[in-house]
Image (cartoon, rainbow, N blue to C red; front, side):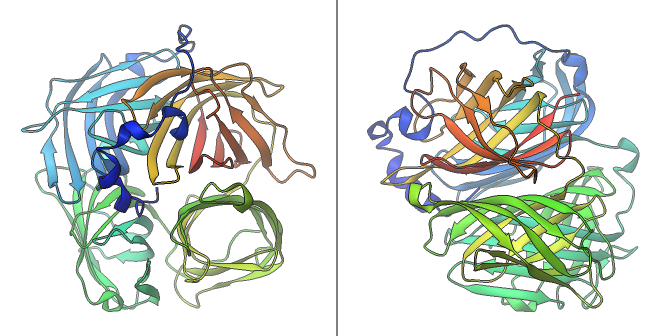
Length: 517
């Protein structure tokens, strides 16, 4: 999510009534009673240990990042857990207990309502959609905040296992002045938890400050929390960012996957880290689907998505890219990716990736992971400040079946950019007809809106010809949304994963769909 728009939020809270629901894609029509949920999910689908994180904004526009872990009993109760909350100007909470009075309810379609009761704080209401018992998409769904993220089943046997080896990470958010900030890197964690200089690499981009690229002086440590297995802290120092100490809290999914939020007060970022190669690495000889979001050089929301083709030996041979800048109709574009290059670092697992969109050059620091994804941080300092992920394509079949879905971004208004987070469930038939329900949080305009029923106008168009894995449009329409439905481009990763980019004139948002198992 682009948090820079938070500079406007504080002025619009008192005047929320000036904005119609339709302006943010959260209303404008009659309420439709949702049909009974269909599927095989039950409370037993959520059982044992889970780690989660999400990021967004609180009710007055401050950046908000939340991460934690909990134990579900498979019967609608959460028996224990811990949570970290970083809320600019309000509070920071570390490893605060999640109380055993916390509850959840899983519907047959995987949509799940969660209430987390916290020690000394108001409860958090979350809305999730499960793709399986192991994975899901999550948003905060109350009047205190909004945000989007993921939830994953933890490996209990690895919560206390020392974390060692290389980890690629990518976080985004803002600095203390609400300027868009992204960070990416590859960190070597030694057996004792040390992160040595010269064996790790780091990139930081801060709007109106500059680009600190390919910093191999970054060093620090990773320290497990002795009182909370699965929780810990990463401390980094980088000479390229004025030696400001960076502190991240993490929760373990397993020894290859961490959910992280920054807690030092200098920056307000969040993201994930994954096990990564430790030496110079090429991209695969394959196509990669990707999305990225952040801020344009004109300080407006921007997001892009597409497919690029790597030859596995330093060349990008082509592809396609969609661009949505500030949800402006004349700033939407589908562009052909021209041949370009990428350059692996001589020793470290970092790649300098160039994408040429009809003559416009986008340069990324790209960090490969061991799971086949590539974490992206734009470092050209010219076009935009965005971060995202590229996924190696393994299939480009027609999309059909039942999916968990999430969209997160900003609804663009003439006076301000308004945060919006959506989670839900959709079923796509073989011809593209789409049914389902969405849970929408327009935090500055209305109460969270549950069970928005998709109408018969919702439709997923066929893949482009020739097939690249891209399709457009994917429309999500509803009587309740009125004229403020969603028009998306989509990018197939495989039979289970589809990336999303909104391409209408109402919002700048990205998201994904995970096929339900």
